[in-house]
Image: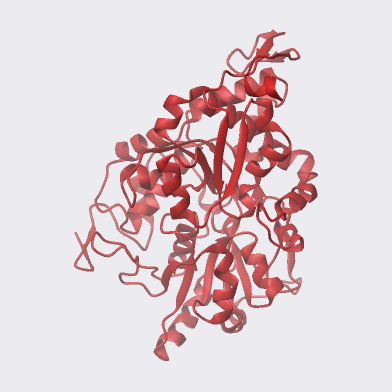
Length: 465
C-alpha cells in the first residue's frame, strides 16, 4: 500500500497496442504516475450515476493509481460546487451544466473543467397519481395491450389547462437550474407545446411566460414532496423515479433516453487550477474512473447486481436495494406492473459514454441560451470556444492510452479519430424530431419551436428582437 502511495514501484505489464501508435506493438514497463497529490477528497450526490466513483474506490482502482481517496456525500449541488471551488473538495460528481455555467459566469463564477463524462441517460420524469389519472386516457394503447411509449407532453397540456381553469398553478420539480434534468424537462414540455418559462437578467426563477412552473427540489425529497402535493411532477435521476412507484405516490411517464437517445448526463468536475497544479493526479483519477466505468458495463451488465449491493450502502446512495436495482439492472418500471427492458437506461462505458465530447457541452449551452440563462446571442465560434475551455478530451485520451498499454482496456473502446464532436444526432433520436449538429448551434436553436431565437433577449419579462 505504501509503495503505491509514494509511487516508487514499477509494474510489469503485457505487450499492448498504443493508441498513439496503432500499428506498433511493444512490450513496456509502466510506472505509476508520479502524482502531485495522493490524498484526495471527492464529493458526490446520492444518485446511482455516482457509481463510477464508488466502484473505483471499492475495486481498488484509485489505489492502483497511487491515490488515497475519501468519497464524501454532499448536501446539494450548490454546496458541492462551492466546496470544489474553495478546494475543500478536490473534485466532484457534477451536473454536466455546472462546469459550463460556472465558467461563463451564470451563478457562481469559476473555471471548472472535466476530463471525464460519467454516464449516459439515467433520468426520468414522474407525475403524481392525480395527474396520471388525467393523462392516461389520452395515451394510445398498443396491440400488446400496453400504453404506447414514449409518452409525449401533449397528453399533459390539457391537464395543465384543467388546473389553470380551477385557479391552480401546475408545479414541477427539477434538481438545479443548470441540470440536465431541468433542460430535459423543458425539452419534453416544449416538444408537447407547453412553455416551461424563460430566465432573464433580473428574474432567475425561470418562470417568465411559463405554463408549467419549474423549481428546485432536492432529489431525495422529490417523492415525499410529490406526495404532499407541493409539486405535481418532477424530473430527476435514479433511484428517485422508481422510488415513486415503490412508495405508490407517482408514476414515471418517460425516461431521458426517450427524450434524447444516449444523452450525456453527469461529469467529473475539477477546477482548472487543480488540473494545472496536479496534471498527473488528474490523469490518474481519469484512469481509475475509466476502469470503473468499464467494470460497470462489461459482459452485458453482468456486474450490475454487485454494483447495486455497493450503491445501496448508506455511504453511497443509501436507498433500498430493490429500488436501485429496478433501473440499474436494465429495466425501468413505469405504471406499477409495467416494467420494460431498458438495457441502456444507465450506460457508463459503451457508446463512448466516458469521452467528454465538445458537442455534448455545446448542446447544454444551446439550452442555456434557448431559455435565457445566456442573455444574448453568441456566434457559433463562442460555443466551440467555451466547450473547448471546459471539456478536456486530450487528458482523457492520454489516460485511455495508458490503460491500453497496461492491458486494462481495448483500443476499440475509444473514439480514436474523433475531433471531439459526435456525428450529428439524427431527428429520430429526439422526441421533437429535430436533429442536432454540435458544430452549428445557432441553426439548432433557431429550429426549435419554443424558446429564444437568434438575437432575441428577454427584457421587462417580454421577448425583445
